[in-house]
Length: 483
Image (tube, rainbow, N blue to C red; front, side):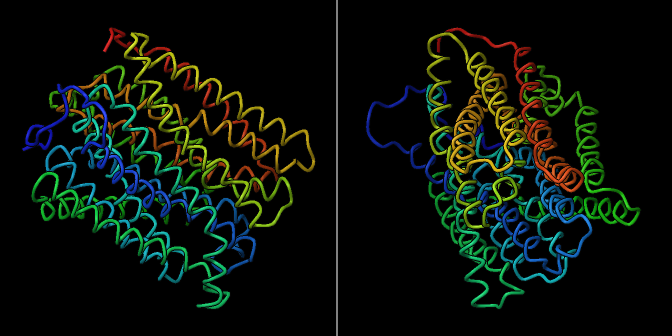
């Protein structure tokens, strides 16, 4: 029986006045889930940058190391993308609480194993498997918040919880140089890169266990066995498909960005299968015009998120000719802005809806401002031979502030335009389509750097895509009656 109908929800109830409420604890736990899962995936970018800078045998000897490094990130997101819709569907069937606990425990084990691998192919397989497990977190997190939070606070709840994304990005970016230095002391220079994966994997595993205990407490036993076996079966097939595409395309000499695009074909096949089932409840989601517009507009959002999250350290280091440590500190201005942006965006959208304005106008405005700021950043890099670290820090922070604020606006708007029984599937489809941007962005951007010797062109593309997404938001039809 779907969890949305099996458990008491916050829908239809007045928001309690004052004091700490049970849904606040839920937000805090999910914030922690975002923190650890994003730290796990973000650490790959700084580690790849370190491997390239130190001419490590895994990457440094490649003829196009940035393209190969970006492809590793893209393959993670190929796995992450492909379990978005199955994760939402499994959450609707086995319970959103169950899938959240399974996702975090899976991520912890897979991240730990990533730090134990030797050889590029084995490492890539583990990153794909990490992505497959983490892919089920998003749709179930959004659904559980909507289910257990008073409707008037849904946007704020989504913003507060996803603040963990920004904290995780910050933690991974700042800690990477220090964890690698510690790894050098413990394992030696050649294996120093392993330490970030081992530390973050262990931390995620511990928090995943705490999450499972909490989820049982708030809703009873978890349907862990059936859901885990079903996810294992799905993941085995999808991992084999992702690696087959990678190995065949790489053997044929295809460029890294081409491999990433082929991986997206897998997603389009899955989307096609969803549309083929138009008579089912799943098909109802695919017929929702607003869901489709939001989903395709979010390709640009995920492109931006993982272009800067994966390559920000390299962008700063290359532009300012700074050290790895200094570049990592500057890059945290991009990551840390979400600590303010996410909850502010959710709160502002809740207030706009309550006043009868709707969420869409704010979403459009914030997207346009962010896109323009990214273009300004690109122009600054292009016109200054050695950009100021302070100016880059300010531009990264302000643009990221608007970028992070617009995300919970889009999430809350999606929640408004779907039925409660279709919420998990809708969020799964939304992130499945959006993750196309995350799959292509790291690989294509790395290839552009190897070709031009600069990140400027990649930054221009990023800003232009954000402005295109604003146009799609303009086409959404939103009911603007007062909440």
